[in-house]
Image: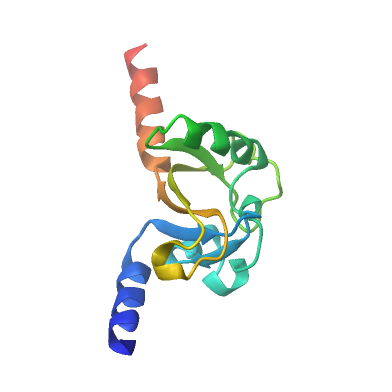
Length: 139
C-alpha cells in the first residue's frame, strides 16, 4: 500500500499542471509540485485559501461555472509576488484554464469529510499571447 501511495504521489508531482483539492471552505488541502510556477512550494499553500492563487473575481465565478457543468474556465493566477489584484498590462499575467469537480461528503473511500472540490489548472499564458499576436497580425 505504501509503495502505491508513493508511486501516485510521484506521478501527481511530475505533472506540469497544478492539481489541487480544497475543503468546504475553499482552503487548499492538497496541491502538487506544479505550484512552483507561481513561486510557492506545496507546503506553503496547504491550508491557505484558494484565493491565494486564483484572483478573487474569478473565484466568485466558480460556483456558476460548476452549476453550468462547463468543462473549463479561464482564471487569472496570482504569483507569489503579486497582491490580490491582477498584474498590470505590462507585467506577466499568468492565465490558467481551470477544470473542477465537486467532492461529495464521504467520497474517495470515506477519506473526505466535507464538500470541496478537486481541480486542475493548466497554464495557458503562452497560448493566449500567441492568439493575441495572431489577432493583431490579422487586423
